[in-house]
Image (cartoon, rainbow, N blue to C red; front, side, top):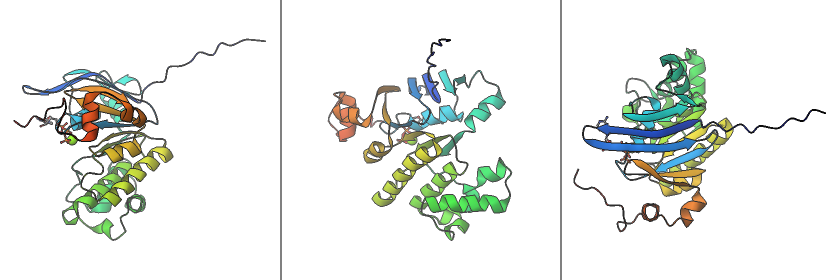
Length: 265
Ligand SMILES: Nc1ncnc2c1ncn2[C@@H]1O[C@H](COP(=O)(O)OP(=O)(O)OP(=O)(O)O)[C@@H](O)[C@H]1O
Ligand SMILES: [Mg+2]
């Protein structure tokens, strides 16, 4: 009988950042970010305002180009890939922008269906149907579908942005501050939605949040960004046990500790 030795394949991270650095003028924002996110994992990045959390996401999305370091999706270095290959890899990512980034000239359902109409060339009828379904998932009715962004509350904009992020059933979803500006109940609805989306789609999620209750609910793993680097990663359980003074201060929301707010800027 043949005897096969099982060779364990190393798991390729869905997203891998190695030594990613980014400055704007003389301001170093990222100075060597290392982070691996594995398929199906939900990772949450925490960190103070202006520490470069959104910049990190934009470097992965290709909206900003890192000055140094590598960004890999499915093991492919995006800088070394062809434009088409990099676009195909990035097309797996659905994104909820911090600001919502809705198109003012499109109504709610057209915003949600944007990628279905533009990239997938779906019929308006079919795209509208999917948009209404996604809107219902974030608690918005068919009436809201015809409204224009200028007439939406901040919380509604956030929900429309979220419906758009999940419209194409993406493999990877980035949520930049998904609960900021929402009331506590809607925040919890959104947290549950993130958890269920990640589970049902089997998606990989990368979320940025200041909201520790949200982080606790949605994270398999938490990573803390401070002074341009990921200084700590761990599970929610480990978060509560860590003696890392930076993490402890952030989680406690305390003004006292090693993290000094830069109030000069
Ligand atoms: N395109 C840009 N040009 C110049 N500076 C930028 C640009 N984008 C970001 N920055 C600067 O980089 C720093 C980090 O910004 P970033 O938006 O990533 O912060 P953040 O961690 O997401 O903060 P917040 O929690 O407030 O959203 C800030 O000082 C910001 O002003
Ligand atoms: Mg931000």
